[in-house]
Image 1 (tube, one colour):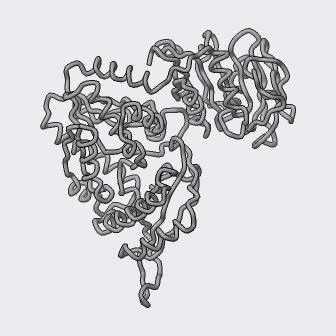
Image 2 (cartoon, helix red, strand yellow):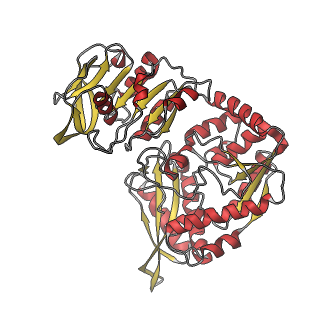
Image 3 (cartoon, one colour):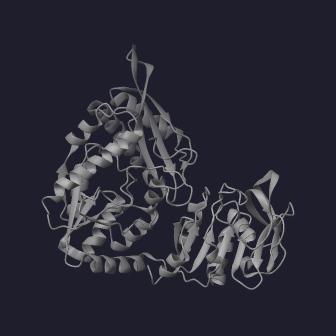
Length: 513
């Protein structure tokens, strides 16, 4: 990525950090979320062109408040601080930051006090979103107030001679009506960046990188049939041809007829020489009696490694393993980006056991799913594959709450197939980001055929999203939900009640486990 514009977003634990990354990416500028521990040496080596400091829950006055190296402020690097980031800048340059008795949270208005490139084309007053408990109480030397809030709080500061500035409000959220324009002003007018983050550029550079890295070696490629691995398979195949060995593992946790469909699509529609292996018995045996969701994920991750170890013995000279890790997987799998919490634990992000003598190739670990879809379209991947809903690595194991058994898998597979079938026939499948059924470990009383029943409850989930980092529940028509529920309770033995999940992410996640 050395020849494209790159922005670092330093994560101080804000719930909006990923939104900043998305807003920057949406303007065709490459952004990367990094922890506060990054160094100026790394920034120079990676040719970072601008720095954005995120918000965060801490106070800059706390003893252990997260910081960045003060050396960054000595570089000729455009810096934009947001909320906590503004307060960090102000405090570094000698200002006082005080805690308020009452937080300023929610919609507010700011008035631009001085012309500045950051506010070019921005109306005054303009509506913004505030979320802070501290505020800058004095102005550091060589800085000036360029905007104030309707509570007379400094809403924006800027250095008089250098490209260092900060906002007390959050331009990345939709509630800041001109926030995207403000960010664009920083990226293009102030930092002088180019909108050069395009699918074509990514494909060109990734192919070159893979060829250079692998030389004449073969690459074992983990295929699931989803959007990510399918797109990656085509990309790597285009880069190295027959040296790419696509492998599909059936872990027994797939949806109805999924193995057949995946193999047919990959082989017949995309021309990939897919090799299919059935490890369902091993996976289900390892999961027997396990109910804790975290243990499930760990076991599945372990079994995948064992499966690939065994398969790899057929290819003793293979040195590389490619997998479809996405940027949200990286963000949510480990607490590497500031004080964020681990959400996913089944992804092999960051490496494999040392005994597996593989080097990882993860070309999509810097991408969001919608960006992968754009790349897939550029590569000519069929729409029916690109439009496939995300499917978790642990498969149906995280959609069966409690123990995973063959009977419970059979019940869920049939119910989920009916749900997806009805979404497709009604035209709603392509209108939602993700939809699936969840088997709940709760039995409820019902009446069917004049008889009392005591069977499983099933939950339906459908969400809208752009990248999976945040999501809202999909407003499916009542008539559609009624038809789906009626079919499921009548056609799937073992279910007598269907409920619909109306929770957004956050506070929930998209998946239930």
